[in-house]
Length: 287
Image 1: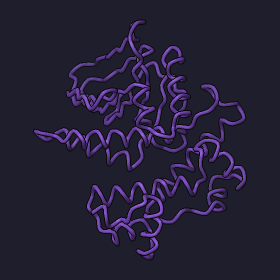
Image 2: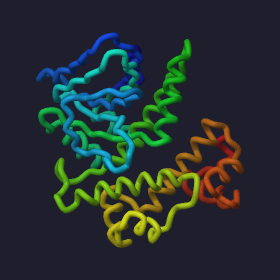
Image 3: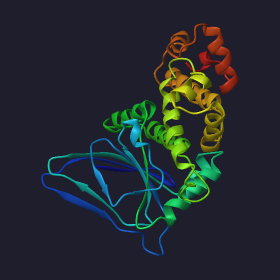
């Protein structure tokens, strides 16, 4: 079990413990005179949170269990761990002020999410599901933490990317609950977003193809995706694709040509042009 100070306003807690009897871990609500801290917990083994009252929750139709939980210390929360289970978690703790500073351009979303968590009762939780990119970052954090002398900057950068990924995906509305008529679309658009992420190593599916796949009209699909994620499907897809390209070049040391082919570009020159336009640097300069 490790508690790590990454910087002012950001902490990491890593737990890998096996319990030999059923146990309930209770986190009490904050004292009235203390500050509000938010926690994003990544469950790397099955654990139950009780009581759980999700504000926003991944669609049960996706088939992926929720393994990310965002909470605040404003309410009491308990975690039940069965006998013999390995409690394996990475938890990021941060202040709202830290979020505003480090997640630039997301002020409205940060305000909506944190306010919903603070006002929730009896215990409000935002439930999410990791994608493949998140799982890579979690693996890299854990690998680094197992070193005798780990690199604090590496852990911090991966933690920041994880938070940005999850906050980007959480849909928000005016108020903690969307209008009744909007709720079905939220679940479907979340599935569309996962479909886009799964296509990063290929070409973007056409709007017509996605509309048919998810039984929506093209105009409805376009309108609701923009309402939930604040950008078009192409803008969202390209942003994630270029983030993945940068990660492959910088962190995995993959060549420019191999990165281009891995991401579905037939011509390396086309990839270089788009990468430079998006990141303002040539991909070769990141090697």
